[in-house]
Amino acid sequence: MNTTYTDPADAIAHDPMNEPVVPPADLVASELPADSNIPLNSWQSVRSRFPHGINWVVAGWLAVMHAGAVAALFYFTWAGFFTFLALHFVTACLGVTLGYHRLFSHGSFKVVPPLKYFFAMCGMLSAEGSPAFWVATHRKHHALSDQEGDPHSPLHGFWWSHLLWLQPKKTNEEVTAMLKRWAPDIWKDPGHRIMHYLYPVILVGSGVALYLAGEYLMGGIGLSVLLWGLCMRMTVVYHGTWCVNSATHVWGYRNYKTRDQSRNLWWVALLAYGEGWHNNHHAYQRLAIHGHRWWELDITYRVIWLLKKLHLASGVQDQLPTR
Image 1 (cartoon, rainbow, N blue to C red):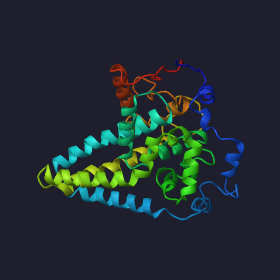
Image 2: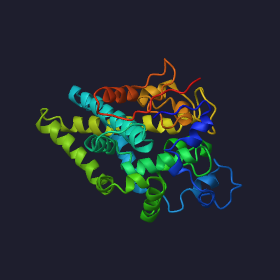
Image 3: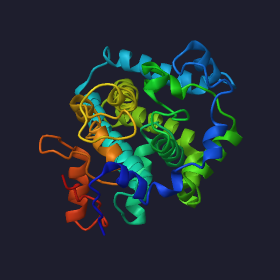
Image 4: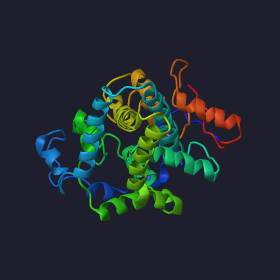
């Protein structure tokens, strides 16, 4: 049953999907830096966020993907380009925005298990982390949005929120504790746990599959299909998602008064299949529809609406708030 709140603050406070992720005061306090008087965007503050150094695996992967995206421009083929378009939709829309975000993080609708794992796999192919890791990070962002402890707030600097927040190295114990704390429902699912541990294998396997398909099924263009279908596609998807973390907390307009700096930004909505209507989302987090005005195009919701009409999605939270 949908419940409409006229005050966005009430929607945040009473949203049942928020209850398990609002941290107790002692947890928030434990995440504050040793010297809380250090300005959030100062060099000292940035250094304090790398207690274990840089995660060179992540940094190296991102560097290779970006280099491959540049190289793709010199190996253009139409087959590679259409592979890029198809996989961009599959991974960014079906995987990240529909699966990771609206289905798993906020429970905006329900689907049968085969579809649930299909959307999870689509999200994994985006190379933005396993479902459990993505959901845990995102729920923590909502609970501490634009406060100390937010994983990617522009209050720590624009480039921190866009990219640098991915670089600090974390111990296995820290990652496991985060998953159990912020995504216990996902972590206890055996299928999701298997996906979490197989995440690197699946990424490498997808690259091998793309190369082999291009080389042996598309006429010897394996390198082009690999560069466009993997490197260029992942790089574009990355920046679309990262702009939601950075740009939509800096620029744009606000339909609702919220406790954070979230904003609606049309060009991010186009890049990220409707995720750019970020102020709407932060005001009413559980809604499956993020575009609240007639001009706010939300492609991801259109897919969810289609699933609903085909009886493949149920419990869709799409009743817009009363103005």
